[in-house]
Image: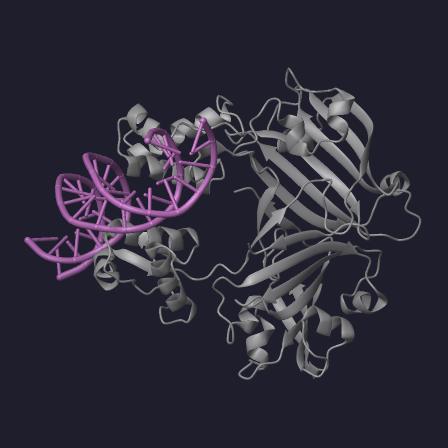
Amino acid sequence: MNSPVYIKIANGIRSKIETEELMPGDNLPSEAALCKEYGTSRMTVRKSLGILTNENYIYSIPGKGYFVKKPEYNKYIIYYDEMTNLINNVDNAKLLEVDIINPSKRLSDTLQINMNKKIVAIRRVFYTDEIPVAYDIKYILYQKGMPIVEKEIEQATFPEMVSRNTTLYGMKKELMISAKVPKERTKKLLNLLEEQALLVVEQKLYDNNDKPIGVGITYYRGDYIKLQGMSQ
Amino acid sequence: MNSPVYIKIANGIRSKIETEELMPGDNLPSEAALCKEYGTSRMTVRKSLGILTNENYIYSIPGKGYFVKKPEYNKYIIYYDEMTNLINNVDNAKLLEVDIINPSKRLSDTLQINMNKKIVAIRRVFYTDEIPVAYDIKYILYQKGMPIVEKEIEQATFPEMVSRNTTLYGMKKELMISAKVPKERTKKLLNLLEEQALLVVEQKLYDNNDKPIGVGITYYRGDYIKLQGMSQ
DNA sequence: GAGTGGTCTAGACCACGTG
DNA sequence: ACGTGGTCTAGACCACTCC
């Protein structure tokens, strides 16, 4: 092991937490004590503690010390975009229509706008091996400079659609995942003959001032799409 | 603004990236240059750059410099446990049975074990306002000291079930989310009369050596449960 | 060899929490 | 008053990249 000192210190403390030698709520030795214990300087010890803080193992209270956190065992990361999925990637998209509409009451509430503002509605169908696997609708606040060029919209993900007007850095987003039985209209669009369940993914985008930019709903054939999440 | 210097530097660089004054792939000024620009020491500048690195705005290549990253606009955080959900929390759970079984071929493959190893199978039904809303199965590698006490299992989440034998810190987990039409057996268990879609959540747990500990599947009534993710 | 980031030291002053 | 963590300085040596 010729890893840096701060890695060794972090590993040492981490394994004490994992083996429950240190329990949640326990007070860690102070920075000064750790400096003595490991025979190193304060900045090095602080680097180690910073790592464990980022990894959610510990937290600090100024004036009091460092404490062991309870593990966060419910947290998952999920990488989602409309086209990329676990079982079958979408390999083609067809634009049904692009409309400029007046929002319904429900939509104007969701987007926190007046009902006389204009909304761009984009409807698409996604295909895998020429089989229609998803029906997709986006409602985006109309802004000048919006790309309403078909070619640009057809194959774009939701964040990409708004990237002309909003930076994608630090953009706030929400996902809602549910399951539904398709309505007749959706059944026809997706050529569904038998009974089928839909995986429904709703997306909501906000700009850096927390103002809603748009909402989208994608209805996936349940037998074609899985979403995947993982820890870390 | 009396925030620390390193916060000011981080904000300065961050907003240059957000306004596209600095574009993905661009080289940032060197640490030494930033020290001069902000009239501060190297450790302070490095603290700022460390923050932006953690926030995924930039990355560094030793010997070359810091560079602006492309934004990660597909990443979401989802907090999931079987009982806590967006629309209706599960307020009760009923244990159907706890079995010690021999795994099927498929299950032994998933858990990477011999078929003669023993598996604990736990079947539960979850309720909201006394309505059955989910059917839940867990398959856990049998280990000595496993809690097979009903009271302990009935209301526990999956990670909690295995916490006797494995630390919850840094435990690796996977989620798979899909939608299915219920089989007759599930329909009966959940008292489903009409056509209904199920939201299916599969969980897989690994110990700190990446060895599978167990798998679980939860079948939720689609009209009762939504999962929520956010960009954090 | 000059410039870059990565690691590390030995100090300093401050705000905060506990006696 | 003392111990705690939070911020900051002015150096140092190293490994790496590029010329």
